[in-house]
Image 1 (spheres, one colour):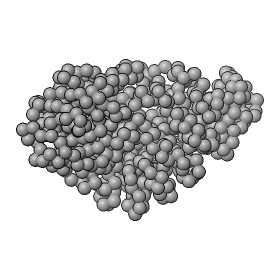
Image 2 (image 1 turned 180 degrees about the vertical axis):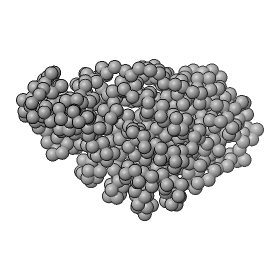
Image 3 (image 1 turned 135 degrees about the horizontal axis):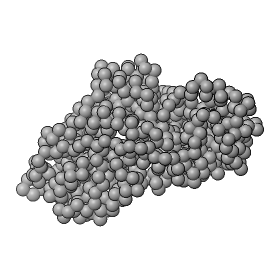
Image 4 (image 1 turned 30 degrees about the horizontal axis):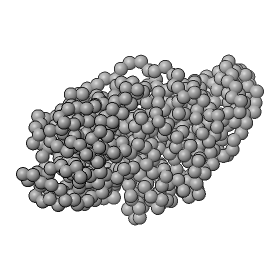
Amino acid sequence: MTRSQGTLDQLQRRIRVARGLEPADCLLHGGQIVNVFTGQLEPGNVAIADGHIAGVGPYDWTARETISLHGHAILPGFIDSHMHLESTLLLPRELARLVVPHGTTATISDSHEVGNVLGIPGIETLAHAAEGVAFDLFLTASSCVPAALWEHAGAVLGPDDVANLLRHPRVLALAEMMDFPAVLASDPYVLAKVHLAHQAGLPVDGHAPGMVGRDLVAYAAAGIRTDHESGTVAEALQKASLGMLVQIREGSIARNLDTLLPLLVNGSLGDDWTLVTDDILPTDLRRFGHIDHLLRRVVEAGVDPVQAVRHATLVPARHYRLHDRGAVAPGYRADLVVIEHLREFRPMLVLKDGKIVAREGHCVAPPPRGTVPVVPSVHLPQLAEEAFRLRLTSETVPVLRIQPGSLVTLRETHEVCRSDGHWTWQPERDVVLLASIERHRATGNVGLGLATGFGFHRPGALASSVAHDSHNVIVAGTNARDMLVAVRALAETGGGFVTVSDGTVRARLPLPFAGLLSTEPVERVEAGLAAVEAAAAELGVTVPCPFGILSFLALSVIPEVRITDQGFFDVVGQRFLGY
């Protein structure tokens, strides 16, 4: 991966190729070029030299290799400007196999998930693992490790650590500033990280769910220039009006595209929007696609296809200072997508640095060599069933309600059943026990709370070592025995997802790298994910993407209530709730 324009010799050669004085390496002949500058579709050829575009237009270049396109469209490679690689459960080489055939040539990942578990060494390991893959994995410097003070993470990244990350060649920005209460309070520790990004001349990403009005003005005054958390039209409009790039999110758990589509169709956001996935599972990437899938939906809703492409290429490239990407134009990197129909966005060819890396839906680039080191990261204390018994002082208790399609939870009050002073599961009431167990230093911290919305109708438990953002072990279950079995099963595999019923492990997906990523091929990961979800469905769990939803129930910077290893937390009131 490089962001340079090449050597002086390559620059000189590029000019000679453009002038027709020597042959190009490759010529895409007879295509329709998507011009993201003018908004036009223009017939022409593309000459490529040393991984860059040397020439574009109706000129008769010669080349060592000519590919006849017969009028098919040539687009810039797609850019997902806000995602978390860890949510795909895949190492970079396997993620490339999924997204490159869909036209993705660059992603910008906030790897604060691995950062929360393994710190800077973990982030550097991921960066190294991205060397030689068929797309560019850029990073943002994690700003909130840990995300908040209400749970224990495996690492702390202070201003000095952030300064080091901002100097990394793959890092393009300061990652999403989730601790918006600290920003609004002018906390010097938090703002020092923002200031470091300003000094480095790098953008600062935002994370402000539901924020509008004067608070949003103050948040933007800190120089925060993006946000991917807009859940309403009014919220997105105000963010765009304040100069923030509205990153319209459509992932596996949180989905905002349908809500915000009218703003794209009528042009209300101007040029300040792009399409992102944030958190997406490999099964959804396989089933639907990546940015190409979002482009299909946007164009079907009525957005001009060339304008839609601009917002998936040039707009994010310019925002993140990737000045050699995002357009089919001379001097730009030859990251290109060839499609048959400009409304269907189904790539026939994908080129990275001028080389064909995918053809007709299949990745043809050779995978990088080497293995990724795995260190144990799930450290649990000795636990007994007693750890999963919640003593109640009343039968009227606070409960977390899941909202499918949203990361926001609701705080409700329910009547539940007690036995010997402890909560007892009743299928008809759809309330289960949540537990968060600190897993980085085996401290013995276990937080307990209650949740509704999963739909269990048989005894069992779901457990995960993916629990945003501190990634302690999180488990939802109907009884102490199954919950304990589930947690012990995770410890055996070094993390992952597991479904348990009647004291028996029904299915599991091991994720041994930081308890977040698989080291296996994507096909095995998809099969494992399908197995744990099918086993969950047999327990009556009907909520879509149950392990994805479970993983976010610990994220104590998103309203209204969450579970952490310190207890059941009221995000709105910034306090723990007792039972």
